[in-house]
Structure formats: C-alpha cells, structure tokens
Image (cartoon, rainbow, N blue to C red; front, side, top):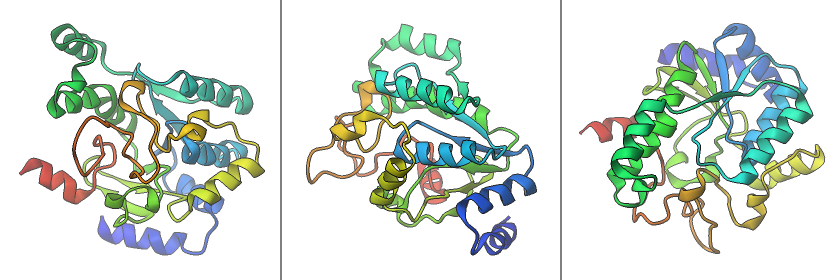
Length: 242
C-alpha cells in the first residue's frame, strides 16, 4: 500500500486541485467520496466538486445534534448547486439504547460517555459511508491543530483502510476565507462568532482569544487532543489499543 501511495503522490505532483480530483476520480471510479460538515473548508471543496461537475459522492454525518446554522448552510448548498449530499444517520437502536440508559446529555458526565456518543453518532455512520471506497477526500488543513501538523495531503488511513486526500491541506485560513469571498459561497455564520470548528451543538462553543483552534470542542474536558476519532492518525490508533 505504501508503494501505491508513493506512486500516487508522484502522479499528482504539480497538478491543480481540480486536476488532482479529476485524476483520482478516473483512477478510482465510483470508489471516491468527500465528507462535509459544512464548515469553511468543506464548503470550498464542495464548490470545487460541484462547480466542476466532478463525479465524487458527497456525504455528511447527520448526528441529530447539529446547530440550526449548520442545517441552514446544508439546505442552501442543496438549493444553489442542485446536487445530492448523502446523509448518514446513527443506527436507531444504538442511539435509543444509549439515550434510554444514560439520558440525552450523558456525554457531559465522562470522557467514556462522550466517546460512546461520538462513536454512535459519528464513527459508526462514517464506517458505513466509507465502506467499499478507496479514496476519502477531506477538508483538513495542516494549521488546524497541533496533532495534524505531522500529517500530509495524501496518506494511508489504517483505521478505515483507504487513502485520504486533503486538497487544501496547505491553505491558510486567510486563503480559505478569500476563496469563499471571491466565489460568493454560502458559509456557516457561526464562524463569524468565534467558532473555527463546528460540530454538534451541545459539544461546541466559541473559542476565546488566545485559545487553541479546537478549544471549543468538548470544552468541559481537560485534554490535550481534541479529536473524536474521525481522523485518527495511525499512531493514535495504535496508542488507543494499548
């Protein structure tokens, strides 16, 4: 797999983002997907895919606890591009059992409960969304958080057993904002209110001046890594099993 990854890096070298996506689409026809949570970065990539009519399946995880502003962006994106965004929901029985047993806000009570909620609402649906695919396109950028600085724009995802491609990995936030402005792209207004990272409403708050990029995620927990497991690195996966 590492040999294939290195070959792919060479094949994509020097190409524009649009050409890279087209190349991957042709090489992995019907086996490439893009996940969006309707944040700044994801709206940029959605625009690139839909505006250039690149045949990449776009999907989102409907956790059931999203902000009203997120649903607005989702709906407006559908109206503007008139393209399908596939929604993946938690399995009803798993969600019902958790809520019936622990209540609707059990994630505030312990890290274990929070991870259980993330698994049911996000990780398990993601596994279904990625199943059978070979390329997963994401909106990750290098500067977003410390534990992502060692990542690359093209990498092997051992957890999901596929290749991940981050088209705007090297972009700065300023470049993302400029693209949105230049192309008049609808975006989540929570970004203007101090929300650089937007997830489920009960688990996300605005970031205060001087705080880390992801300080607003699971803000009641005292931990150095603010990840739910969607984008674990290979090292984190091994560590989690020890």
